Image 1: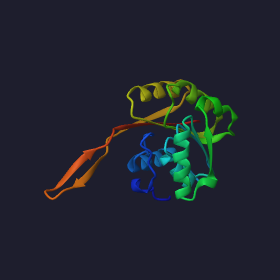
Image 2: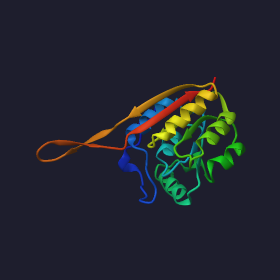
Image 3: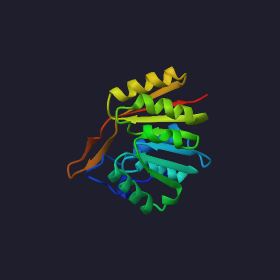
Image 4: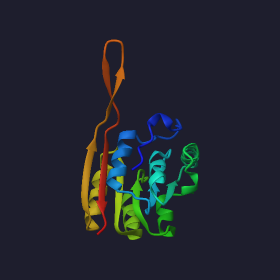
Length: 190
């Protein structure tokens, strides 16, 4: 598997959160089990941190975000890493476009705009047998809603809470600086 792109190699946008931190991207790639034959739907792609990682590994990625500035930043990151030909950028609310996508192997939800229930149910319909859903969240409510919907769909759910701290070297020593804790909810369609 390709290594994960270091954080400092991403173009950032002060108007858009992200990119998803390097260590989280590692875990998401592991939980998604993405392969070179897979098609990925990345809903709420933000600045494209996960989109870039999926594009390095998957056959095709559909990166969806309703914010044109987010998609612009995602495109710049894809260009920087020479991956733009592997991704279709779609400016829309995820709830509006999931029906129009071909069936996919991985549904990645990084942002739902408060419509997680609908996105997961619609995504599940388009998800191929054996496909995986991965949800990342900084809000406490999002994993709870995701777990409920996935269980209602008959999926076996896994939840991982991640707290990352990175060392900041000073003259006196190393101070650990905490990043936002993230919850990763994942499940497989049988």
